[in-house]
Image (tube, rainbow, N blue to C red; front, side):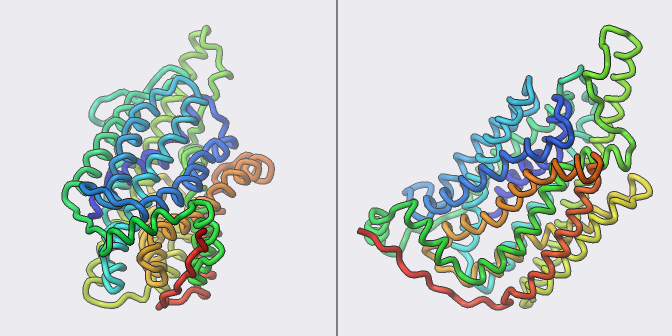
Length: 446
């Protein structure tokens, strides 16, 4: 049931690892990157609660409850992945990011609810860890795709303002894997109709989307609010990584910042040659940043595999595991500032991967036990507010911080990531390890 996450993570890893590279290639300044990325969390804020609410109230006689959204999101995401690296202008690439992130969210949010739907409480930790294992595989492979495609002989060079063919081919492969893996889940996973289909249809007719959403926010379980604070600082850290790792690491560790095309007169052969050399150095460094980032996917895969083996036999102390993982990830981010060589980055991202494996599984396992089954989808969607709100915050503040406080040194965005994960770990002290079901009163219909 979790295999489709392989494709979803191909989409997210290509987005997280290479969209900033596409933006910079199309002329974006590095301090503008976080704000250009704001499309991603804004679409998540709008799409995830809506999809969660609708999927709770959907029943299709063939595709079931969650799978219609898997298919729709996969088709739209694959189209956006194919188009993104061919964007002729920066504003078109930014618009495509809106479409891509919205489409990925249409597929992703119901996957969380599917696992909670089909597994009892004692198996949910195992289920979410298996999802994380598959996510780790997708992250590692997709993060290495442009480098691998370059090694296969596809050019990593292009004219000013043009994304290299290696990136274009990598995104095309990602589009195919996204759609194919989603279809594997759709065709091999069964969903079962509500026990009383007539009552389900009657209740669906009573609902009012906006009233019900506001009602559920107001009556959000206490456990969910507490985990939400942890999520806020966790996802602030990773948004900073996705948007700023490429400019931060190419200049700080590889000494190969993105060239500004307007600074070169392409009509002068010597300047055109200089631009080509500097741009090649940046594109090669960006490939290697992607390779290094792939290690956080590989690391999360290994951690998830170990947790899966353990969770299948023993009861996990989810809060302790999550706290330790966040601390390890925070130290990984901080180590990048003092990285003595590019090879050192791999160790830093290995440590980050430990946190990533936990972030993708433990919060959901800690949350699911306090939610009623009939509201699982909508609350999983609302829970994602604590994923997108920190990303919106980061998108608004990181650019000014980098430009005005950090003297345009993007590496400090990753230092902030490390501090943010350490802060998240401290807020876990308020989260209950063994959550109890917290019934939510029915909204008034009339």
